[in-house]
Image (cartoon, rainbow, N blue to C red; front, top):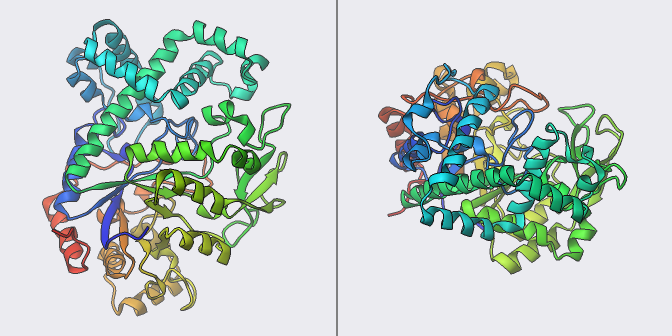
Length: 501
C-alpha cells in the first residue's frame, strides 16, 4: 500500500545507551522516541527482534516470532519490583560505544533468572493472571519455543537435529517426558517472553502516541537451528534422515561475489505450505502486526523465485532458480488480514516478474543512494528514476555509513555525485545525501542514525559475509542534541515530509 510523504530513522534497539552493556527497552528507548517526535520524524525502523545465537545476527534467530530476552530492561524489572537496586552490585565496566555480547549476556542472564524466581515467589495475583493469559494467547508458538530453548540448554546448546532421535523427531512420549523434566526452565523462557512483549508493548504504545510508527523486519528465511524448523519440519526442505537442510538458501554469483552467497537456511517446501493454506506464514504476519505497524520483507524477490543449493555444496555457485507461489501467498494473507502495510526489500537480481508481484500488491520497493553513482543514467537508484511508491535510504544496515562509503568510493562515484548535486561538502557529505534522500519523490525516506550523527566506518552495523564482530555499534546518551533535532526537523519541513496536522 502507498504511504504518505514522510521520513524516519533506522536504529536497532541494541544500539541504545545502557548501563548494562547492550541497548534495551528502557528509558533511552523512550528518549529516542522523543527525539524522533521533536525532529518531525514519523517512523522508527528496527531490525528483526528475535532471540539470536552465534554471531548475534538478528537475521539468524531461534524463533520467527519470539522476542530477544537481551532487550529486556533490567531497570523496568526493578520498577516492577522483580529486582532491587542491591541486585545490581558489581556491574561490569561495559564499553559504551559497542556491545560486548558475551559479557552482557552473562551479566543479564543471572539477573533475568533472579527476576523470574522473584516473579514466581512474590508476583501479585493480577500479574500472574496476566502471565497465564499471555501464555494461553501465544501458545501456538510459545509452547514449542520454550521447550526448544530448554532442550537446547539441556543439550549443551547443540542444534536440534543433533539431539537424541525421539526429541529431534518430536516423538510424543519424548516430548511429554522432556516437558515434565524441564518444567522449571520452560517456565523461565515463557517468563522472558512475557516480559519482552510487556515492555515492547508499552514502548510501542508510547511511540504511537507520539505519532511514531514502527517498521519491523521479517527475514524471508528462518534459521535451520530454530524452533520453527524443529516444530514444523514438513514445511521445509530437509534431509529426512539427518534433519539438516536438503536445499539451502542463498543468492547466485554476481558482481559482488564470484561464488555467490550460501546462507545455509533451509528453503521452504512450498507445496506443503500451499496444502495448509499458508497457515504458518499467515500466523507469522499476524504475530508481527501485533507488535509493529509496518513490515519490511527482507529478500522479497525470493517470493517470486528463490536460489536453492543442494546439501553438501560449500558455495552457492551450483544452485538453481525455483519458482515460488508468492502471488498465492500474498493473496491468502490479504484475504485473512486485509491490505498489508508492507515494504519490499527488492535489492539484488530483480526481474520483471518480481516487480510485477511487488506492484500488484502495491508494496513500496527500496532505493539506496549509495548504489546510485557507480554506473550510467539508467541506474534505478538515481533519484530521477524513482517512482513515488518507494522508500529511499542513504544506506541500510548492510551498507557502510555514508561517511565510510564516501571515504572509500571510487573517483568515478565521487565525480558523479558532485555532478548530480552541483556541489558537495566533504565534511558534511552525510547531510548532502540525507538532503538528497529527503528531496526525492519517493514517499518515504529512512536514514540510519549513524548517518544523522555523521559517523564513519567505525559505526558500521554489519559486514555481510563476516561471521563475527557485527551488530555491535552503540551511541552515547548525550548524542541526540537539540541542535541535531532542529537540523533534521528543518529538512523534514522543507521537503514536505513533516506530519500533517
